Amino acid sequence: MKIGWVGAGIMGNPMVHHLLKNGHEAHVYARHPQKIQNLIEEGAVLEESIASLVQHSDVICTMVGFPSDVKEVYGTIFEHIEPGKICIDFTTSSPSLAVALAQQGKDKQVTVLDAPVTGGDAGAKQGTLTILVGGPKEIFDQLQPVFTSFGKDIFYCGEAGAGQKVKIANQIMIANTLQGICEAMTYLKSQGCDPALVIQNLQNGAAGSRQLELLGPKMLQNDFDPGFYIKHFVKDLRIALDQKEVKLTGVENVIQEYITLMDQGYQDLGTQALIKYFQ
Image (cartoon, rainbow, N blue to C red):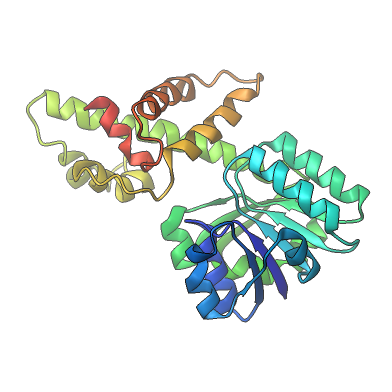
């Protein structure tokens, strides 16, 4: 397939790498072309504008940072896109925005899928992301060659916006899990025990989790390099709190802790830096 890609950052870059590896033709737009030199060397075509990218692609993929970025990018895409083309937004964004984009696309005879991913930078690099898709089922089926290039578990969640809703549920669970890990480590330390026992003794029991496995050791080593930025996690948690149907007490607590860290200048650290709040 001829695939256009906007947003080849910490997640998007390895995703494009896997597209190329699987034989797809990739056209990439980047505000900082020097950051995608590896993709150019692998055969990606650097486009000077989003307009040019849309013109040369059948499927246009986006993986940007915030809902405001999504709005801006799709404003440009919709100015230049032709009927019959398909867009996939892999950004974790607002479900209501996903619905709005799908309707705008429909008005232009263009299909827009929301397809947020989970698995972090490690999953992107390994090509094992979980992909949560909302939109027309027949288009979801048609785009399997794209999804399977960098995804391991690929789920159809329902109509437009459903992928985003499931992804936000994922972030709610992660937020509460990270909170529990930090509290458990802090508790053990206060009791004169080694916090590492949370991992060594409990990882394989009922309290074990993927977050503990991947981020627990980093917390103990004060390794806060981002696999997923605090600033982007706070964005996701704010989306969760925007809904009024359910009170999310755990999210309300965790987001305030992360906002405190952002106020201290730590917005570009990984989510495991939550332990700094407790330290």
